[in-house]
Amino acid sequence: MLATILDGHDIEPRVRTAAERAAPFLEQSDAMRVRVKMRVIAAFLAEGINESDLAGSTGYGYDDAARDRYESLLARYFRAEKVLARLSIVSGTHAIVASLDALTCPGETLLCANGAPYDTLAFAIAHAPYSLVSRGITYAEVPRTPSGATDLGALTDAVRAHRPAVIFVQRSRGYAARRALCIDDIAAIVDTVRGTGSRAPVVIDNCYGELVEDREPLEAGADLVLGSLIKNIGGGIAPAGGYVAGRADLVERIATRIFAPGIGAGLGPTLGLARAFIQGFFYAPLVVGETLRGLNFAAALFADLGFQVDPLAGAARADIVQSIRLGTQAKLVAFARGLQRTLPINARFAPEPGRVPGYVDPVIMSGGSFVSGATIDLSCDAPLREPYEVYLQGGITAEHAALGAVVAATEVMRTK
Image (cartoon, rainbow, N blue to C red; front, side, top):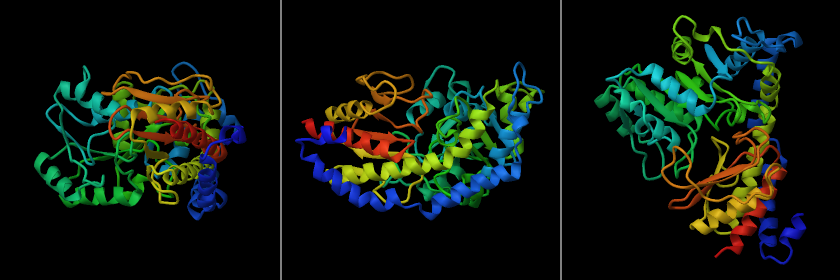
């Protein structure tokens, strides 16, 4: 297939150059990936899960051993006092909004430490009907520096001025020209907040960042991490759900908000799906490692074609998202359509820009996951706005991600 795509096009030498440049990252198992894998294995061995633990429950889910084992397993991995990982938390955004709602009362301030959060979350916090702001919560944010980093000096001033009840941090770049935060960056934010004397919970949106480094945000001093069960930690297998992990008192407060006072985390059936969650987490380090290998190739290829990419091939990564600045709407559409042709599901579809709830601008997306919305599978998203960046994410095998990048690049280079 690749030979047919490349035949007669001058992109072929660029593909070979990119492959040579990315070879060290495609062929070697680096020390970070080994440490992440061993950390997950250690959590499994310490937990001692039995086959009989996987049966799960229906109805209310009282005493669901599978749920308890899974949450205990994640707690070991994240170094959390308590984890809430449930089918009834339907997305990372749901986990985040429910948590912020539980931890912030009317008249109190929610402070975003590193600029505005991604579009759909910003909409839910401040602009949608029944948003947090609409019920009396004050919202403030600290603009990022021109380089996209967190402005720690401005964060100090904002914490002292607003005395926030909660400080929120987005780890991933999301769909914006910003830097993803590594664990050291998160540690610096926590230290800055604590240096002001504030004891407000520091809450991390961990979506797209799990298992990318050999530490997680709770080990950097954060109080809570929140995310999706169908992205990094789902390993391409988990079918739905979201999680909250961290301080036990905060997790229980959030559980009370999601379910009901007096019930808290005591209910929640796994409906026979616990095996997929637990098996998916076991495979997750391998899947994330493959994703990072594929993104390194895509970064090398598009950089060689003259496009601005972030991160560069071989650079340290903090999430599973690759930014590629294409410069025009036409090239965004070409990229998305080229990528779609390589996806295992819906390969014959041709993506079109359209309105998506929670986004200000039209968005074009490519997706063909076995689990809807599980962007650990190869996919892309691109808001139609300057500087016309596409965000390539996921890729369960590096070879598939590389093929997707090549076909997308071919279509981009054909487009004026």
